[in-house]
Length: 270
Image (cartoon, rainbow, N blue to C red):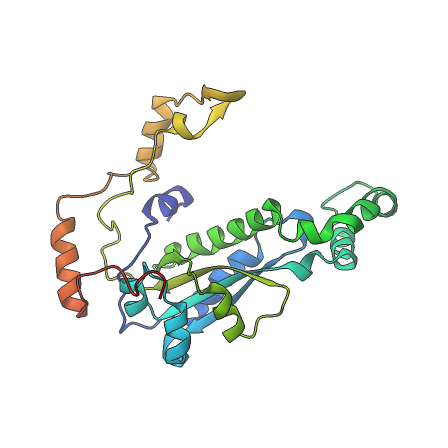
């Protein structure tokens, strides 16, 4: 598929085929997509732990389950536990990563001159602020970029995913033996969709002008109808949910997968 169609076909999948295992190589492709994402200073703070349902303990699966996660937790064969590694920003490593960008000719024009400028101007500033930077909006922006790339590759490979969080997310980190420098971010369920790929249509979103502005807040970015039509033709913008047959599909999935007709896995606060 072309990139725009992959974006257009992406849905949050909550019903997976529990009997169909996910090939290890497809998970590797997702992780490679995350590894090749853009990152400030190339520190690469994104980390993940792949959890195979059939190898996980009952206590780990219970801890992984968020309150709003009954369907996906009952059916997904794989989970990825994503976390931010604060140690990636440690000043000596960060500076070495910048040197690596210089030697790869990704920043600067002169290797020796750019390294000298980093030592003189950037290193003193970064030395004072690297710990704050490790949990700054930029750090989590880079996490989001990496996970987004992994997600799009999953859909390109015929998989579906569901991003989740949990009030127990810190406890899960301890169960997975994460280092003290880890900041748990999200759990991603991965598997082959039991739902049709349309998943009942594209989730409704606010108009472009409500979300994005031009030159200053309050001045909406004006959408060009011709561009909107182009994106429909490219399958990035599709029919909005719900599609007429969605209710029947959901009832079929509940019966076929032997699930209870509910969405809450656990009660909030338990």
